[in-house]
Length: 407
Image (cartoon, rainbow, N blue to C red; front, side, top):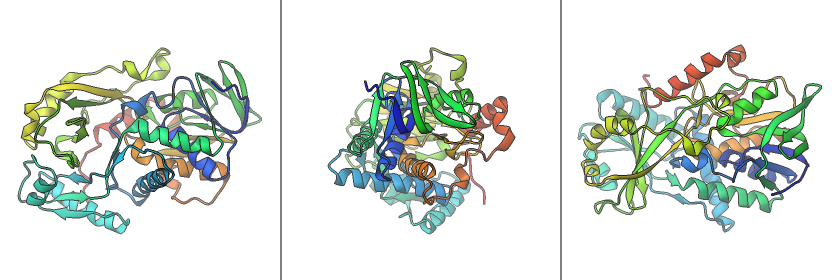
Protein backbone atom coordinates (compact mmCIF):
# COMPACT_ATOMS: atom_id res chain seq x y z
CA UNK A 1 0.00 0.00 0.00
CA UNK A 2 1.54 3.31 -1.12
CA UNK A 3 1.81 6.10 1.44
CA UNK A 4 2.56 8.80 -1.13
CA UNK A 5 1.05 12.05 0.16
CA UNK A 6 1.53 14.44 -2.77
CA UNK A 7 0.61 14.27 -6.44
CA UNK A 8 -0.16 16.52 -9.33
CA UNK A 9 -3.45 14.64 -9.77
CA UNK A 10 -5.22 12.51 -7.17
CA UNK A 11 -7.84 10.09 -8.50
CA UNK A 12 -10.49 8.84 -6.08
CA UNK A 13 -11.49 5.33 -7.12
CA UNK A 14 -9.68 2.42 -8.70
CA UNK A 15 -12.38 0.96 -10.94
CA UNK A 16 -12.09 0.90 -14.71
CA UNK A 17 -12.90 4.61 -15.13
CA UNK A 18 -10.25 5.61 -12.60
CA UNK A 19 -7.71 3.28 -14.19
CA UNK A 20 -8.52 4.53 -17.70
CA UNK A 21 -8.27 8.15 -16.57
CA UNK A 22 -4.87 7.42 -15.02
CA UNK A 23 -3.75 5.72 -18.23
CA UNK A 24 -4.73 8.67 -20.40
CA UNK A 25 -3.20 11.18 -18.01
CA UNK A 26 0.07 9.24 -18.21
CA UNK A 27 -0.15 9.19 -22.01
CA UNK A 28 -0.65 12.97 -21.88
CA UNK A 29 2.61 13.30 -19.96
CA UNK A 30 1.13 13.63 -16.47
CA UNK A 31 2.97 10.85 -14.70
CA UNK A 32 2.60 12.25 -11.20
CA UNK A 33 -0.81 10.69 -10.62
CA UNK A 34 -1.95 8.92 -7.45
CA UNK A 35 -4.97 6.59 -7.62
CA UNK A 36 -6.57 6.00 -4.22
CA UNK A 37 -8.77 2.94 -3.73
CA UNK A 38 -10.23 1.85 -0.40
CA UNK A 39 -10.37 -1.84 -1.37
CA UNK A 40 -8.64 -3.66 -4.22
CA UNK A 41 -8.52 -2.31 -7.76
CA UNK A 42 -11.55 -3.10 -9.91
CA UNK A 43 -13.29 -5.01 -7.12
CA UNK A 44 -16.62 -3.15 -7.00
CA UNK A 45 -19.08 -2.58 -9.86
CA UNK A 46 -16.35 -3.11 -12.49
CA UNK A 47 -16.07 -6.72 -11.35
CA UNK A 48 -19.83 -7.21 -11.76
CA UNK A 49 -20.13 -5.81 -15.28
CA UNK A 50 -21.08 -7.80 -18.36
CA UNK A 51 -18.31 -6.10 -20.34
CA UNK A 52 -20.23 -5.56 -23.58
CA UNK A 53 -18.47 -3.27 -26.04
CA UNK A 54 -20.87 -2.09 -28.72
CA UNK A 55 -20.69 0.89 -31.06
CA UNK A 56 -24.35 1.18 -32.10
CA UNK A 57 -25.24 4.27 -30.06
CA UNK A 58 -27.78 7.07 -30.19
CA UNK A 59 -25.25 9.85 -30.79
CA UNK A 60 -21.92 10.47 -32.46
CA UNK A 61 -20.34 11.28 -29.09
CA UNK A 62 -21.44 8.01 -27.49
CA UNK A 63 -20.20 6.07 -30.50
CA UNK A 64 -16.84 7.85 -30.44
CA UNK A 65 -16.45 7.16 -26.72
CA UNK A 66 -16.67 3.43 -27.43
CA UNK A 67 -14.43 3.80 -30.46
CA UNK A 68 -11.71 5.20 -28.20
CA UNK A 69 -11.98 2.14 -25.96
CA UNK A 70 -11.48 -0.14 -28.96
CA UNK A 71 -8.48 1.97 -30.00
CA UNK A 72 -7.07 1.67 -26.48
CA UNK A 73 -7.50 -2.09 -26.57
CA UNK A 74 -5.46 -2.26 -29.76
CA UNK A 75 -2.72 -0.13 -28.16
CA UNK A 76 -2.68 -2.13 -24.93
CA UNK A 77 -2.40 -5.39 -26.85
CA UNK A 78 0.35 -3.97 -29.07
CA UNK A 79 2.23 -3.13 -25.86
CA UNK A 80 2.06 -6.76 -24.80
CA UNK A 81 -0.84 -6.55 -22.35
CA UNK A 82 -3.82 -8.90 -22.20
CA UNK A 83 -7.03 -6.92 -22.69
CA UNK A 84 -9.56 -9.71 -22.25
CA UNK A 85 -11.42 -8.45 -25.34
CA UNK A 86 -13.12 -10.93 -27.67
CA UNK A 87 -14.15 -9.50 -31.03
CA UNK A 88 -17.21 -11.68 -31.58
CA UNK A 89 -19.32 -9.08 -33.35
CA UNK A 90 -22.80 -8.23 -32.12
CA UNK A 91 -26.37 -8.60 -33.33
CA UNK A 92 -29.24 -6.34 -32.36
CA UNK A 93 -32.56 -8.01 -33.10
CA UNK A 94 -35.84 -6.43 -34.14
CA UNK A 95 -39.00 -8.39 -33.36
CA UNK A 96 -41.59 -5.78 -34.38
CA UNK A 97 -42.09 -3.34 -37.26
CA UNK A 98 -41.51 -0.43 -34.87
CA UNK A 99 -38.20 -1.88 -33.70
CA UNK A 100 -37.21 -2.56 -37.29
CA UNK A 101 -37.70 1.11 -38.13
CA UNK A 102 -35.55 2.08 -35.16
CA UNK A 103 -32.88 -0.45 -36.15
CA UNK A 104 -32.72 0.82 -39.72
CA UNK A 105 -32.31 4.39 -38.45
CA UNK A 106 -29.61 3.35 -35.97
CA UNK A 107 -27.61 1.50 -38.61
CA UNK A 108 -27.80 4.49 -40.95
CA UNK A 109 -26.61 6.77 -38.14
CA UNK A 110 -23.81 4.38 -37.19
CA UNK A 111 -22.50 4.46 -40.73
CA UNK A 112 -22.45 8.24 -40.62
CA UNK A 113 -20.43 7.97 -37.40
CA UNK A 114 -17.91 5.73 -39.16
CA UNK A 115 -19.02 2.46 -37.56
CA UNK A 116 -19.03 -0.77 -39.57
CA UNK A 117 -22.72 -1.68 -39.29
CA UNK A 118 -25.05 -3.51 -41.66
CA UNK A 119 -28.54 -4.98 -41.79
CA UNK A 120 -28.75 -8.76 -42.07
CA UNK A 121 -31.70 -11.05 -42.71
CA UNK A 122 -32.92 -13.94 -40.59
CA UNK A 123 -30.80 -16.56 -42.37
CA UNK A 124 -27.61 -14.58 -41.84
CA UNK A 125 -28.53 -13.88 -38.22
CA UNK A 126 -28.97 -17.61 -37.59
CA UNK A 127 -25.66 -18.32 -39.31
CA UNK A 128 -23.89 -15.76 -37.13
CA UNK A 129 -25.63 -16.94 -33.96
CA UNK A 130 -26.77 -20.57 -34.30
CA UNK A 131 -29.76 -21.29 -32.11
CA UNK A 132 -31.59 -18.02 -32.76
CA UNK A 133 -35.23 -18.04 -33.80
CA UNK A 134 -35.78 -14.66 -35.42
CA UNK A 135 -38.59 -13.22 -37.54
CA UNK A 136 -37.94 -13.57 -41.26
CA UNK A 137 -39.52 -10.21 -42.01
CA UNK A 138 -37.41 -8.04 -39.66
CA UNK A 139 -33.68 -7.56 -40.32
CA UNK A 140 -31.14 -7.38 -37.50
CA UNK A 141 -28.24 -4.98 -37.08
CA UNK A 142 -24.79 -6.57 -37.32
CA UNK A 143 -21.61 -4.89 -36.05
CA UNK A 144 -18.62 -7.16 -36.81
CA UNK A 145 -16.10 -5.20 -34.73
CA UNK A 146 -18.11 -5.29 -31.51
CA UNK A 147 -17.62 -7.86 -28.78
CA UNK A 148 -17.08 -8.06 -25.06
CA UNK A 149 -14.23 -7.85 -22.59
CA UNK A 150 -13.59 -9.58 -19.30
CA UNK A 151 -13.98 -6.42 -17.19
CA UNK A 152 -11.34 -7.15 -14.55
CA UNK A 153 -8.78 -8.09 -17.20
CA UNK A 154 -9.30 -4.94 -19.27
CA UNK A 155 -9.26 -2.71 -16.19
CA UNK A 156 -6.06 -4.39 -15.00
CA UNK A 157 -4.47 -3.77 -18.40
CA UNK A 158 -5.28 -0.05 -18.06
CA UNK A 159 -3.76 -0.03 -14.56
CA UNK A 160 -0.61 -1.86 -15.68
CA UNK A 161 -0.08 0.51 -18.59
CA UNK A 162 -0.65 3.49 -16.28
CA UNK A 163 1.98 2.18 -13.85
CA UNK A 164 4.42 1.94 -16.73
CA UNK A 165 3.72 5.62 -17.32
CA UNK A 166 4.60 6.55 -13.74
CA UNK A 167 1.18 6.39 -12.06
CA UNK A 168 1.05 5.18 -8.44
CA UNK A 169 -1.83 3.06 -7.16
CA UNK A 170 -2.62 3.00 -3.44
CA UNK A 171 -5.09 0.33 -2.35
CA UNK A 172 -6.52 0.17 1.13
CA UNK A 173 -6.66 3.98 1.31
CA UNK A 174 -10.21 5.23 1.73
CA UNK A 175 -10.87 8.82 0.73
CA UNK A 176 -13.06 10.53 3.31
CA UNK A 177 -13.41 13.84 1.51
CA UNK A 178 -11.94 16.46 -0.80
CA UNK A 179 -9.97 19.28 0.78
CA UNK A 180 -11.25 22.61 -0.54
CA UNK A 181 -9.75 26.02 0.23
CA UNK A 182 -10.61 29.37 -1.36
CA UNK A 183 -12.90 27.63 -3.83
CA UNK A 184 -10.26 25.21 -5.11
CA UNK A 185 -9.56 21.54 -4.54
CA UNK A 186 -6.27 21.18 -2.70
CA UNK A 187 -6.19 17.43 -2.24
CA UNK A 188 -8.04 14.77 -0.30
CA UNK A 189 -8.33 13.47 3.23
CA UNK A 190 -7.89 9.72 3.65
CA UNK A 191 -8.14 7.40 6.61
CA UNK A 192 -4.36 7.52 6.73
CA UNK A 193 -3.85 11.27 6.44
CA UNK A 194 -3.98 14.06 3.90
CA UNK A 195 -2.85 14.01 0.29
CA UNK A 196 -1.92 17.28 -1.42
CA UNK A 197 -2.82 17.55 -5.11
CA UNK A 198 -3.19 20.25 -7.74
CA UNK A 199 -6.26 18.51 -9.13
CA UNK A 200 -8.66 15.88 -7.82
CA UNK A 201 -10.64 13.45 -9.97
CA UNK A 202 -13.66 11.66 -8.50
CA UNK A 203 -14.14 8.29 -10.19
CA UNK A 204 -15.65 6.43 -7.26
CA UNK A 205 -18.56 4.72 -8.99
CA UNK A 206 -21.64 4.56 -6.78
CA UNK A 207 -19.87 6.72 -4.20
CA UNK A 208 -19.01 9.56 -6.61
CA UNK A 209 -22.01 11.64 -5.54
CA UNK A 210 -21.18 11.14 -1.86
CA UNK A 211 -17.60 12.38 -2.30
CA UNK A 212 -18.74 15.32 -4.45
CA UNK A 213 -21.36 16.37 -1.89
CA UNK A 214 -18.71 16.49 0.81
CA UNK A 215 -16.82 18.94 -1.41
CA UNK A 216 -19.88 21.17 -1.68
CA UNK A 217 -20.98 20.29 -5.20
CA UNK A 218 -23.66 18.09 -6.76
CA UNK A 219 -23.46 15.25 -9.27
CA UNK A 220 -26.48 14.43 -11.47
CA UNK A 221 -26.09 10.66 -11.16
CA UNK A 222 -27.50 7.88 -9.00
CA UNK A 223 -26.67 4.16 -8.60
CA UNK A 224 -29.22 1.64 -9.86
CA UNK A 225 -28.94 -2.12 -9.48
CA UNK A 226 -28.30 -4.18 -12.59
CA UNK A 227 -28.26 -7.97 -12.58
CA UNK A 228 -27.06 -10.69 -14.93
CA UNK A 229 -27.23 -14.48 -14.79
CA UNK A 230 -24.93 -17.20 -16.14
CA UNK A 231 -26.09 -20.57 -17.44
CA UNK A 232 -24.33 -23.90 -17.38
CA UNK A 233 -22.44 -24.83 -20.59
CA UNK A 234 -24.55 -25.78 -23.62
CA UNK A 235 -23.33 -28.12 -26.37
CA UNK A 236 -24.98 -26.17 -29.20
CA UNK A 237 -23.20 -22.92 -28.35
CA UNK A 238 -20.46 -22.23 -30.90
CA UNK A 239 -17.05 -20.69 -30.00
CA UNK A 240 -17.80 -17.70 -32.26
CA UNK A 241 -21.27 -16.95 -30.86
CA UNK A 242 -21.66 -13.14 -30.82
CA UNK A 243 -23.12 -10.69 -28.37
CA UNK A 244 -26.89 -10.53 -28.96
CA UNK A 245 -29.15 -7.70 -27.86
CA UNK A 246 -32.92 -8.22 -27.86
CA UNK A 247 -34.44 -4.83 -26.97
CA UNK A 248 -38.00 -6.12 -27.39
CA UNK A 249 -37.27 -8.53 -24.54
CA UNK A 250 -35.28 -5.94 -22.52
CA UNK A 251 -32.39 -8.39 -22.74
CA UNK A 252 -28.85 -9.00 -23.90
CA UNK A 253 -26.61 -12.06 -23.82
CA UNK A 254 -23.06 -13.10 -24.50
CA UNK A 255 -20.92 -16.24 -24.15
CA UNK A 256 -19.55 -17.04 -20.70
CA UNK A 257 -17.45 -20.15 -19.99
CA UNK A 258 -19.34 -22.35 -22.42
CA UNK A 259 -22.73 -21.01 -21.36
CA UNK A 260 -24.43 -17.66 -21.73
CA UNK A 261 -24.57 -14.55 -19.59
CA UNK A 262 -28.08 -13.06 -19.65
CA UNK A 263 -28.87 -9.51 -18.62
CA UNK A 264 -32.31 -7.93 -18.28
CA UNK A 265 -33.34 -4.32 -17.69
CA UNK A 266 -35.92 -4.21 -14.93
CA UNK A 267 -39.11 -2.24 -15.47
CA UNK A 268 -39.22 -1.42 -11.75
CA UNK A 269 -35.64 -0.34 -11.01
CA UNK A 270 -33.98 -0.53 -7.62
CA UNK A 271 -32.02 2.61 -6.86
CA UNK A 272 -29.39 2.15 -4.15
CA UNK A 273 -28.72 5.12 -1.89
CA UNK A 274 -25.18 4.35 -0.74
CA UNK A 275 -25.09 7.61 1.23
CA UNK A 276 -27.73 6.20 3.56
CA UNK A 277 -25.89 2.90 4.00
CA UNK A 278 -22.41 3.45 5.36
CA UNK A 279 -21.65 -0.28 5.32
CA UNK A 280 -22.90 -0.95 1.79
CA UNK A 281 -20.67 -3.13 -0.38
CA UNK A 282 -21.24 -3.96 -4.03
CA UNK A 283 -20.68 -7.63 -3.28
CA UNK A 284 -23.75 -7.49 -1.04
CA UNK A 285 -26.05 -5.98 -3.69
CA UNK A 286 -29.44 -7.64 -3.19
CA UNK A 287 -30.41 -10.04 -5.95
CA UNK A 288 -33.92 -10.75 -7.20
CA UNK A 289 -34.42 -13.97 -9.11
CA UNK A 290 -38.00 -12.92 -9.86
CA UNK A 291 -36.52 -10.67 -12.56
CA UNK A 292 -35.08 -13.73 -14.29
CA UNK A 293 -38.32 -15.65 -13.84
CA UNK A 294 -40.32 -12.82 -15.42
CA UNK A 295 -38.05 -12.19 -18.40
CA UNK A 296 -36.56 -15.57 -19.33
CA UNK A 297 -39.69 -17.02 -21.04
CA UNK A 298 -39.78 -14.17 -23.55
CA UNK A 299 -36.08 -14.56 -24.31
CA UNK A 300 -36.49 -18.33 -24.78
CA UNK A 301 -38.88 -17.59 -27.64
CA UNK A 302 -35.86 -16.11 -29.41
CA UNK A 303 -33.28 -18.64 -28.16
CA UNK A 304 -35.13 -21.88 -27.35
CA UNK A 305 -31.91 -23.65 -26.34
CA UNK A 306 -31.76 -21.58 -23.17
CA UNK A 307 -34.23 -23.99 -21.65
CA UNK A 308 -31.64 -26.77 -21.76
CA UNK A 309 -29.28 -25.33 -19.15
CA UNK A 310 -29.81 -24.27 -15.55
CA UNK A 311 -28.65 -20.93 -14.20
CA UNK A 312 -25.49 -21.57 -12.17
CA UNK A 313 -24.35 -18.07 -11.21
CA UNK A 314 -24.66 -14.38 -11.81
CA UNK A 315 -23.63 -10.86 -10.97
CA UNK A 316 -25.20 -7.76 -9.46
CA UNK A 317 -23.72 -4.30 -9.44
CA UNK A 318 -24.79 -0.70 -8.94
CA UNK A 319 -23.72 1.30 -12.01
CA UNK A 320 -24.52 4.99 -11.87
CA UNK A 321 -27.19 6.40 -14.19
CA UNK A 322 -27.91 9.95 -15.30
CA UNK A 323 -31.18 11.70 -16.21
CA UNK A 324 -30.28 11.81 -19.92
CA UNK A 325 -28.24 8.64 -20.32
CA UNK A 326 -24.93 10.43 -20.94
CA UNK A 327 -21.76 10.13 -18.88
CA UNK A 328 -20.81 12.88 -16.43
CA UNK A 329 -17.22 13.81 -17.27
CA UNK A 330 -15.24 17.00 -16.73
CA UNK A 331 -14.85 19.88 -14.31
CA UNK A 332 -17.41 20.07 -11.50
CA UNK A 333 -19.08 23.47 -11.08
CA UNK A 334 -18.22 25.53 -8.05
CA UNK A 335 -14.87 24.00 -7.11
CA UNK A 336 -11.83 24.73 -9.27
CA UNK A 337 -9.51 21.81 -9.86
CA UNK A 338 -12.21 19.23 -9.08
CA UNK A 339 -13.17 16.81 -11.85
CA UNK A 340 -15.45 13.80 -12.17
CA UNK A 341 -15.94 10.68 -14.27
CA UNK A 342 -19.17 8.82 -13.53
CA UNK A 343 -22.67 8.13 -14.88
CA UNK A 344 -21.71 5.09 -16.93
CA UNK A 345 -25.35 4.02 -17.49
CA UNK A 346 -24.27 0.36 -17.67
CA UNK A 347 -21.68 0.88 -20.39
CA UNK A 348 -18.69 1.81 -18.26
CA UNK A 349 -16.53 -0.94 -19.74
CA UNK A 350 -17.46 0.07 -23.28
CA UNK A 351 -16.91 3.75 -22.54
CA UNK A 352 -13.80 3.57 -20.38
CA UNK A 353 -11.37 4.68 -23.07
CA UNK A 354 -13.37 7.66 -24.25
CA UNK A 355 -14.16 8.75 -20.71
CA UNK A 356 -10.53 8.40 -19.67
CA UNK A 357 -9.33 10.47 -22.59
CA UNK A 358 -12.00 13.16 -22.14
CA UNK A 359 -11.15 13.40 -18.45
CA UNK A 360 -7.43 13.69 -19.12
CA UNK A 361 -8.03 16.46 -21.66
CA UNK A 362 -10.21 18.33 -19.15
CA UNK A 363 -7.55 18.10 -16.44
CA UNK A 364 -4.65 19.13 -18.69
CA UNK A 365 -6.57 21.78 -20.61
CA UNK A 366 -5.82 20.11 -23.93
CA UNK A 367 -8.23 20.58 -26.83
CA UNK A 368 -11.16 18.19 -26.49
CA UNK A 369 -11.17 15.24 -28.88
CA UNK A 370 -14.83 14.54 -28.07
CA UNK A 371 -17.59 17.11 -27.77
CA UNK A 372 -17.64 17.78 -23.99
CA UNK A 373 -21.11 19.34 -24.00
CA UNK A 374 -23.22 16.16 -23.69
CA UNK A 375 -21.01 15.00 -20.81
CA UNK A 376 -20.71 18.33 -18.96
CA UNK A 377 -21.24 17.89 -15.19
CA UNK A 378 -23.14 21.18 -14.97
CA UNK A 379 -25.59 20.54 -17.80
CA UNK A 380 -28.60 20.11 -15.47
CA UNK A 381 -28.04 23.35 -13.60
CA UNK A 382 -29.89 23.72 -10.31
CA UNK A 383 -31.78 20.45 -10.83
CA UNK A 384 -28.60 18.57 -9.95
CA UNK A 385 -29.14 19.72 -6.35
CA UNK A 386 -32.61 18.18 -6.19
CA UNK A 387 -31.72 14.72 -4.86
CA UNK A 388 -35.20 13.29 -5.31
CA UNK A 389 -35.47 14.52 -8.90
CA UNK A 390 -32.05 13.08 -9.72
CA UNK A 391 -32.89 9.69 -8.24
CA UNK A 392 -36.27 9.39 -9.97
CA UNK A 393 -34.89 10.59 -13.31
CA UNK A 394 -31.96 8.16 -13.14
CA UNK A 395 -34.22 5.23 -12.29
CA UNK A 396 -36.38 6.19 -15.28
CA UNK A 397 -33.31 6.22 -17.52
CA UNK A 398 -32.58 2.66 -16.43
CA UNK A 399 -36.17 1.52 -16.98
CA UNK A 400 -36.21 3.12 -20.47
CA UNK A 401 -32.85 1.69 -21.54
CA UNK A 402 -34.36 -0.24 -24.45
CA UNK A 403 -37.27 2.11 -25.04
CA UNK A 404 -38.08 2.62 -28.71
CA UNK A 405 -36.46 5.69 -30.21
CA UNK A 406 -39.06 7.11 -32.58
CA UNK A 407 -37.90 9.33 -35.39
